[in-house]
Image (cartoon, rainbow, N blue to C red; front, side, top):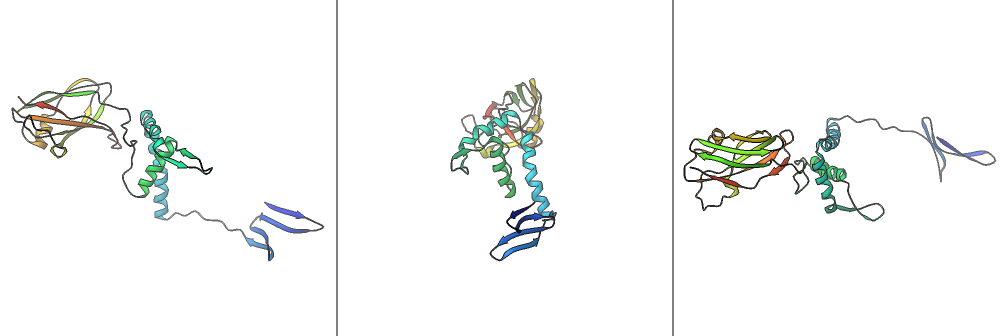
Length: 226
């Protein structure tokens, strides 16, 4: 919109009028064409736009417990706002900040707040029976969980397992309620036979099968083969 400065006569115009821009400087009145930027749709720009819209969609997929975990993390990420005051990000703002930086750097996204597991657990799981032809786990949970199991080969009872001793051998849904699940075939296919008299250590990860987000990593637990 043009602005007119009135005197005895109209002697100055500033602003935009249709396709022209009016300015006034030391050289007097200047009139130039108004330029418009055109949308850019190169493959690289399109990819960047998709990246920018992907992160907010992931936030909407988080559970309330997971969002609460991000809120609990905000005091660790302070910044100075425009007024020069130290402030905290919102949970959503922190999620965007961290994951957009990771995504633009082509690094794995961090859906779970650092040090948090979203409040979701698989209940209780223990070895119910183990031997040369048997490996049964008993579980009790209020909800169905997708669990990835890791286990060691047979060790002496006085041997403490190292992280490198654990090999993944099964990934499956464990239904809610009190359940017994036989994973003998899966274990022996990955780790070899079960030998009587040795101790076998296990742990599991409770994850989202769609995003790979880790909700829980169990403590190590064991069973002695009979």
